[in-house]
Image (cartoon, rainbow, N blue to C red; front, side, top):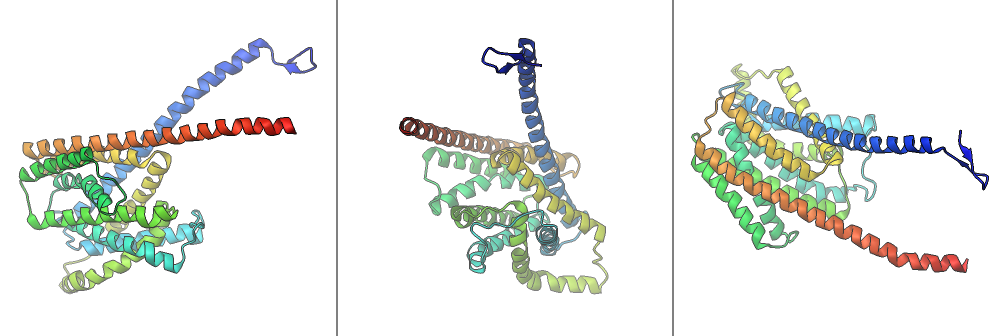
Length: 369
């Protein structure tokens, strides 16, 4: 029970106040610890699924393993599976809401989603094709060029301003990747061309997302992104598939060579869909920058796995070159983090200044009333 005060109010005893304050002190570190542990859990789930999808795709496409040399067909299976599950989650179970402000009209879909879907199709086609010709470790090293491609295209599209320090950083990353390529024991010109084309397509897609979607206030999570983009991507993939892989598939099927395993392709597609859910959790609960940093950790794990388990050759020159690129990417992520902190501090400062300006006006209005 509380203690009645002289004004008739009931005040808690001092002992009770001490207990409540101690509980608050204990609860705050506990909630912070729980938040940190959840963030690490999201990172671990994303790294595990991304790792699994990459290794699984390599297993299916590599001539020395499962030997399914049809990357477009594999990508189309992924897109059909993801589009079907996304449609079920949105339309049947209604677990995810579609964007309403602005609504996705047919004209808006053609102007925004179709170009992104086309680039996504190219990115997936080229990147999956590269696994036939290159090792997993070397592909991860080539992917370090992604910040270089994104920054260069962002300058070209005028969504980023040119900074000498940033460009020197990009040149350092490029130099590291060049050294890694020079030391690659299993260098294949066609495979490298495919992977570089995949990086270019993906970088263009990321820049166009900012220009076509973000600037118009269209916010899509990975489920609604798949709902809109996967069918479009599947449609674009049918064009090269018809001319490049369909004749070969028909010949291989007639000869009894190709007999796809439903379990293999089903679990592979499920992993690809789960990866999109993990992206939603990681970016939604932490940030896109956290995913970039986690991606660097994942790349090192994949390089170690490729060398120790798949028995891919990783030379000291490979590692030295990737270490240079890694330092450049780490600095890029650090610079992004500092820019985000500065922007957030500026936003809070403006909000506090606005609040201070409104306070005298509120006090004047209160005196009048």
